[in-house]
Length: 76
Image (cartoon, rainbow, N blue to C red; front, side, top):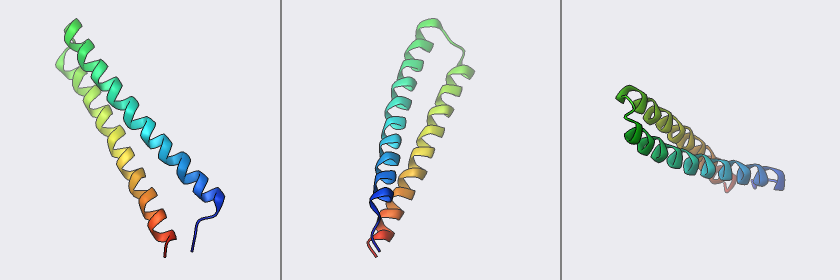
């Protein structure tokens, strides 16, 4: 069983979205850490940025696994 061109395109779009989410989450996290240090943000707020970034990474890992499984299953 192979993927149709539409399914392949959907997986490609999903892969790109995962890559963008990872990159943006990392850049925003680094910016939040730097800004928090500069303005003396309380630790509880910096921890919220950490949790949001971890949530983005968990989402990305789940979606990457789904992409991998779909591609693996399509090869038979």
